Image 1 (spheres, helix red, strand yellow):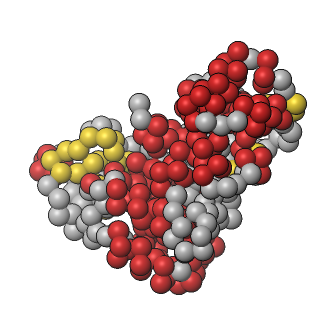
Image 2: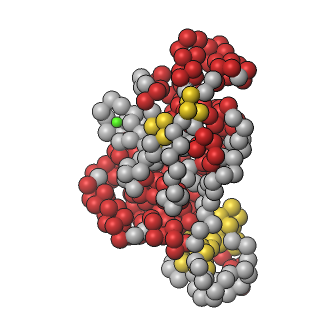
Image 3: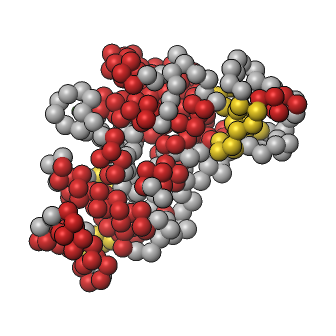
Length: 331
Ligand SMILES: [Ca+2]
């Protein structure tokens, strides 16, 4: 499976999903990575295929620590990437009045850059605002895990995404060499994602850019992140001005009439036969039928092809709907 796809499917967890966990301070501890045979093969691969100096890679991994907290998240001890919590709870974190006010201010303060990105990539600026809001609240929550420790731990200890993390560790070596950064001084999420839109190293290598022309592709720079997201949306097929998602006329408690998913579309005429109609203009002939789950009832939505672009970054309906709602709020 392609790495980007894997990332988009499972990895990037908006900080808001994690905010409720009680963080137990478990500092990373010294660990003998070099004693592992697979670490030695990894070093040899970096030396032979990517022309790193053996001494350098060895010393980086010798100093890397075991981060048990990050490992626990991928071995079933934490609920990672879960969107099982109620929609109200999610909304309370992402769409509270203070966050929406911040989003409006961000749009105002970065209007010129947003306008440039929107023009250059043919995407709607309000959705760029929504992405950066949900990913990091405009750079406020970008993670303070030591990335080399997190990725070395996840690359060389059994977990459900070990292959992916081994590849990301390789990309971390490549990225820091390409961008002249100290591999030991990179901080981010427990999964090695960094900056305002939480890119893992492979994504920063692919989408990272210097959108404010200061000579640095900086994942923590909000203007650079505007460029990254605009390019991502463009590359994934965003169509400017096209419908994203609209509420429907469903007013019951639980919706179980049809399967709801952002992976499969229905003909709008089929939905109509089932009594489901959009409450706002919906000018595409097919729609994804979506549901957000409140404590006592479901909201049912119809989504266009643009919605799929949002969920290519993070594969959760709530994620996409939250970005839409922020975009509406800053319009
Ligand atoms: Ca820059």
